[in-house]
Length: 254
Image (tube, rainbow, N blue to C red; front, side, top):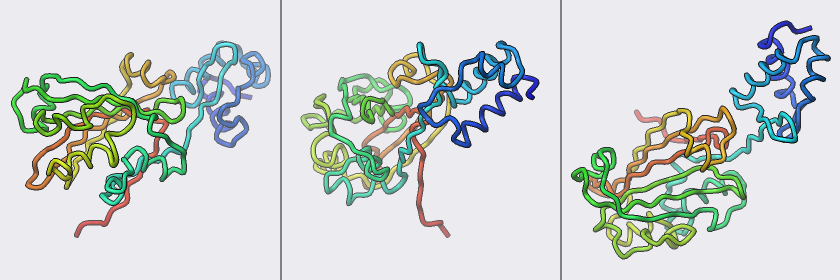
């Protein structure tokens, strides 16, 4: 018999991890849990809230407490940017899908494009003055009907003016995406720096990514350089933490 809500949460967590309650299933009703474990409803509610905060379950109206799905979507590390991929037409998000053996279509990515003044972070990354006009290309990427992440890229105006990178039509910016476009302008991507940090989402991010309660996000900052360390793109990405596993394979430096 359990005593406190943390003890009950441990029991329920172990049952979920064993597969007694598979992803997408509904936990027993709270009064049934209370009767089975000899606790009151308040204890059950506290235990469920703890599991919700851990991202294991989500309360769904008219269904009850649902065990969350954790789809095995890989976000490839170095290999997602391999030149052989985008030069053959496979953009990074599609490389992730294929690496995860998931179907994808071009319209899984939509975008909005506009000119904006460079904020301090963008200006520093691109090596330009703060306030300089840049193109902002904000994408939303979905897996079926489920949003997985956003990615907002910033480019110097002279680098992308008149190219598919400023076309807001759904899908990548032509065959091979943005890296292929930059290559066609004589700015072939040569190296990338990525910085990641975890945090809780803003209300806007919760709504845009359809995040359940307690879901953190992974914020990505990516700077792409051409030869001679010239920055040609700065991107901010917001990823739903439970919808990806981040995979990196690399040769260990001497």
